[in-house]
Image 1 (cartoon, rainbow, N blue to C red):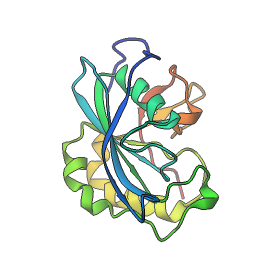
Image 2 (cartoon, rainbow, N blue to C red):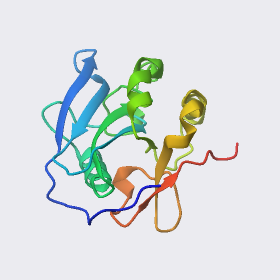
Image 3 (cartoon, rainbow, N blue to C red):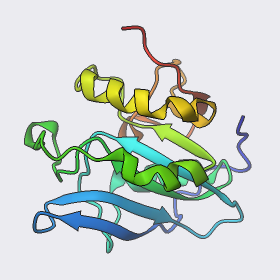
Image 4 (cartoon, helix red, strand yellow):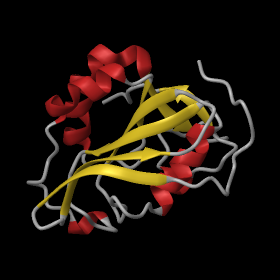
Length: 173
């Protein structure tokens, strides 16, 4: 399991790059988030949909997640989402913009950890279940952020730096 190596650096500068965009930049398939760190671990994070971040700017979700992962010795993660539609709320998601996770097998294979960061909402249950089925072969490196109250998987916008990394346990249907 992962141990914290230091407190969260809330001034950590996060770089976003190598994103894949489509539909006139209204959709984002993936985005790499990196920072200067003594850590060497890499991760994949899987959420619902992108909010604002692109190759030139991060957003609150990705910056918070990067600062949290930095405390555990990570130096980079690739952000993937169930849907590729940019939207600051889930009402704006185009359900036809599903991500083809099979395109990211190499990224999933090489990552030290895969984090489920889609939050505790029951929304998109079927889509989440399909992704979890595809991720079964990676169960030994499937994690989430767990709150101090043991709720998980937390979305980065709902977490604090006191949260911990926990193995991801599939909810009972």
